[in-house]
Length: 290
Ligand SMILES: CSC[C@H]1O[C@H](OP(=O)(O)O)[C@H](O)[C@@H]1O
Ligand SMILES: Nc1ncnc2[nH]cnc12
Image (cartoon, rainbow, N blue to C red; front, side, top):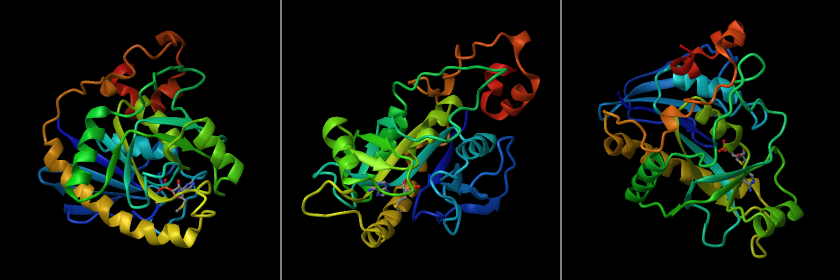
């Protein structure tokens, strides 16, 4: 199997450079329109698909992003691995603005978003105990460090609905009581959907601020965030450029089973399945649905 590297660019990351045969492609999905066209091309012999999460021009809010369409579009283009790049606030002194945190856990506080490809007529339950892929996460950490970024291995991401930032009481709750490390508005349901689509998924939190808990930094200031974000975006592009060489063009099965997540997950008996939903699931779950 070939590596096809999908990258979802967050706030400030609306394109990547240096792809051979680069072009923006419109992708239709049964879940509606993705956030934008997908930039496809090759880097160091590896096929790449880049999708700006908020669309070029930053059109989609965290609540309006069509997460199902985005994941389906990348899977449909053949992605084997997806790297999610996100601007995040930090709950830890040592996780400073400009640093990257390789997220490995989440607390999902989002609501009102479509969180599954499955539903009535085709019910599935996948495990998200370990929602990110350790192999892909390690490659991201290595590629970012090679670009001079300070990288923290492991961190819990609090996914909030937004679009407003947290109140001071929420910020303290997430940090002191729930033990979260970073906060953002888009990590969920993206990670859950990537697991349902049997994609290796890694999440790179690019720290832009200390949210509002830090006594020396006051409340979140969007002007400060944007300034930090622009520097972070260059680092993210540097990381992305190093990944194809690290991952290689030929891809062995995932040692952690990300690419087999649906193996025993579908509970609905074949004869009881809704043909219309089964048809919509073709790109994400065709491997097990036949
Ligand atoms: C720019 S501040 C808030 C905004 O940035 C993050 O987006 P993304 O995760 O796509 O980088 C955060 O989740 C909010 O949507
Ligand atoms: N403090 C914060 N809270 C939520 N999302 C963010 N994105 C960047 N900084 C953030």
